[in-house]
Image 1 (cartoon, rainbow, N blue to C red):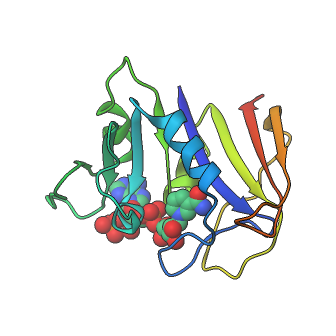
Image 2 (cartoon, rainbow, N blue to C red):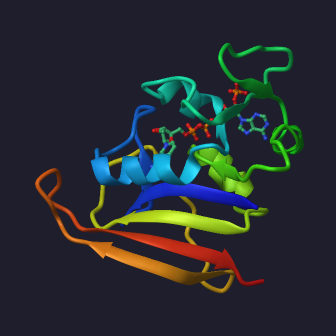
Length: 162
Ligand SMILES: NC(=O)c1ccc[n+]([C@@H]2O[C@H](COP(=O)([O-])OP(=O)(O)OC[C@H]3O[C@@H](n4cnc5c(N)ncnc54)[C@H](OP(=O)(O)O)[C@@H]3O)[C@@H](O)[C@H]2O)c1
């Protein structure tokens, strides 16, 4: 099972200056709960954006096109196929970003675990439009604004329907 996990703004924004655009503590806790014990696969920019590297309790697999480069603290891989192959069969693969990696995995992922942030953000990295002819919504949980944020957000899971 390959799942994409991402938080996306209303205008599809996901990052700026190699950083996230918001801080939603509940979403971070949920991210940890979902991914713990599994493989997390990411691009090199996302790896270097993590405040704590590697993400503890998970197999961290990082993609770079720079052949021979060894990134300390993770399993370094040089192609999508190799990255997927590095995950133990007993574990699920969670694709955790960023923009470049999501775009490629959208073609092969089985499931999207999306936090839809109901606000537009200024950004330099965007998630592709989710094609509802391909992706069927199977779960939704809505949350209003809270003491941390002035915007509402929804956890939505999609499965590939074609
Ligand atoms: N909102 C969210 O949930 C979320 C989650 C994660 C990240 N983000 C944001 O996304 C942004 C980072 O995204 P990004 O698009 O700049 O970078 P990225 O996808 O994290 O990493 C891109 C790098 O991955 C490597 N790469 C990509 N495709 C590859 C392939 N097929 N084979 C081998 N290596 C490959 C390349 O590394 P080399 O340059 O070394 O060749 C490329 O430069 C940040 O702002 C981050 O905060 C947001």
